[in-house]
Each structure stands twice: as structure tokens, then as C-alpha cells.
Image (tube, rainbow, N blue to C red; front, side, top):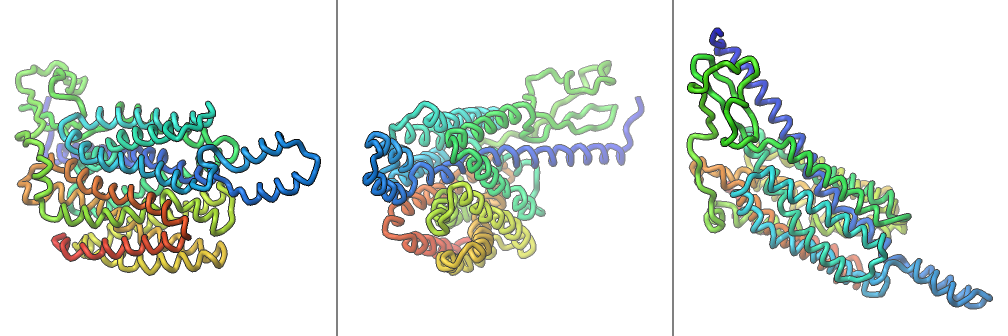
Length: 489
């Protein structure tokens, strides 16, 4: 067998690398889309868990003057006012507590998830997390099927789901960071990070389809989807690049997720089965650096500052994620399905904003400056949205798109390109095993804000939605204040 020419070897290696990069990009995109798809239903179902009971009260007055049976009236009122225990006047506090239970568990679990993820096979770690998340998402929907009205049940499911969902973000960011260099990372990750908005849109559409007839299916269907994607992850995810080199017959790169303990003969092409085993060497890397510690990751320049910036930016983003459909229902007087469909425009704007932030930061080479400009524009835009919402659907649609871009742009940039930059910072001297831990610290701190935002929204909205928007604008300004410390990238 003649040696393979160097040019052909380079072409084969390049094509194979490109194909596997594309596979990793698409697969991790779909995997995390399913995570967000399973988080969105709760925001759509809120308006069904508690309906506007004023109409029911009017019906009760009319019915009381007629010959209608009291028992039938009581049944009608119970059905129309919502799902116990969310049918009482304190429903906003209960719904806020349910959001907080998920997001608080997510924030706490995220700090541990990155450390664990650095020490376990990512493919298996992510698969287990997705399967468990699917089970708990379905379990929430089964509360409707089996007529469960115990608040503790729903809180438990939310806490458990929040913990297992922390396996997702550090894992997919580590995979994408392993395959793509720093050159056009802002653009690539801006496109890739649109999975959050795509997942939100699909979750809204799926939940909206079932919400009025059987809201349990609004959770069960996304739960089954994330379970199926967990199986796909186990079968096809490739964590990093492996190389096979054999002397005398040229060079070839092999990309696979098999551990080194497998028989190297299985890695050879079929036509080369007769090649003796002696010259074959499987090379994973030159040396295996040790995983970085939690405190070591905190000492990387920019990690603490960007973590604090994300805390406030994610507070705003997740308040919209969990409360926007309910706000639209009240402000525009729409039913749950139409409000959910309209809320997807915020995520469409988020896709554009995330890509735009990535492109601009690549061109300027300034991630922090890009975030600062978008945060500066976001605060007055939020105020405009709260005012314009009163003037009908047309102005609201336009403002939803603009707000989505300005709110989600910095959030997307920090959680992807910035995290990957810091996880491969020059101070690490080539140790790429810090990526998962750094990602978990930044996103975990951001998740503290994500937990506080919906909780505060539930408490403040009792005094009017204006107070919620003032809180969001304050959070944007606070995110902007920590920006001067982050000018290093």
C-alpha cells in the first residue's frame, strides 16, 4: 500500500474535521433547544392555572337570580377560576415561588455541575441529565392527569428538574469550545446560542396548542422530546477530537468518543485489517492537564466581573421568559394561546440580538463594550415597552422584537463567547479543562439573578406591572455598572 500524499492527507483530515464540527454544532444546538423547550411551558400555563375570576363573579350574580342549582354554580366557579391551589388571590406569589424553586435549585446546582462535568465523560453526564429532566417535566404534567392539587408536589418537581437541568449548559459549551477556535467565536456562538430562543418559541407553540384543552400535555410532550434527545445524545455526541497515527501508511485523524481502553484494531478502516498492530498508536493528547479548582477558576481575570454582569442581565431575560405571556394576557386582554404565540416575538428578537452581538464583538474585538452598548439601550427600551403596550397590538409587536434583541444580546454573548474566551484564557497556559468550570461559575451566578427576577416580579406585580418594569430597568443599569471592570476582553 503506497503512502498517502501529504496534500490528500490534509484534504481528508480537513473534510473530516469540518463534517464533525458541523455535526457537533447541529447536535449541541438541538440538545440545548430541547432543554429550553421544556422550560417554557410553565410561563404559558400560568394564565390557565389562574384565570380571571371577575367574569365568573358576574356569571354567579346572574345565575343567583335564576333557578340554577347551587351545586352546579359552585362547580362552574371552581372550573373557571383556575387550578387549585393557584385559584386564590395570592396566585402571583405562589407562581413566583414555583419559578423561584426551579431557578434557585438551578443556580445552586450549576456551581457543582461544572466541577462534576470536568471529571466525568460529558456524553454520559449530559445523557443522564436529559433523561432525568424529561421524567420530571412529564411528572409536572401528570399533576393534571391525576388531578393533583398539592403545592408541595409541584415545588418538589420544580426543584428536582432545576437540579438535573444544570447538566446541560456546561456540557454543551465545553463541547462547542473543544471544536471551535477563537477566530470567529462571536459569530459562531451567536448563531449557536439562538437555540435558547428557538427552544422558547417551540416550547410556546407546543404548550399553547394544549394549554386550553389539557395543560398537562403542555409538559408531557416537551418531556418526551427531551428524553428522545437524551438518547440521541448518547448515540451521537462526540466530545473531542481523537487522533490515530500509524507509521509507514501515512497519517489519518479519527474523530470518535470511544475511550482509549477499546481495542485499537476496531479504529482501523476495514481494508486495513491486515496491518500489524505494532505501528499503531492512539493519541488523545500530549498530556492530560488536571481539572481546575473552583477557586482557581475565580482567579481567572474577568470571571468574577462577567459573572456579576450576567447576574443582572439574566434577571431581566428570565423575568421575561417566565412572566411575559401572563403580562400580555393582562395588558392586551388575550387568551393564553394567543399571548403565548405573541410572546415568541421576544425570542425572535433575541435570536437577531445574539447574532448581532457576536458579529460586532468579533469585528471590534471588544466583548465588554458590545455588552455595555446594548445594556445602555435596553433600559429606556424597557420603559418604552411598558408605555406602548397600552396602545394596541401593533406597537407591542414592534417593541417585543426590539426588547428581545437588546435584552438577550448581552446575555447570549456572555454565556457563550465570553465564557469560552475566559475558559481558554492565556493565564491557563493551554489547560482547556477549565472551560466547563468557568462556564458553570458564570452561568451559575447569572442563574441567581434568574431566580430573583421572576420571584420579584411575582411580588411586585401585585402593586402594578409598572413596578416590575422599574425593577428590570434598575437591573440593566446595575449590569452596566460592572462593565468598566470587564474591559479586558
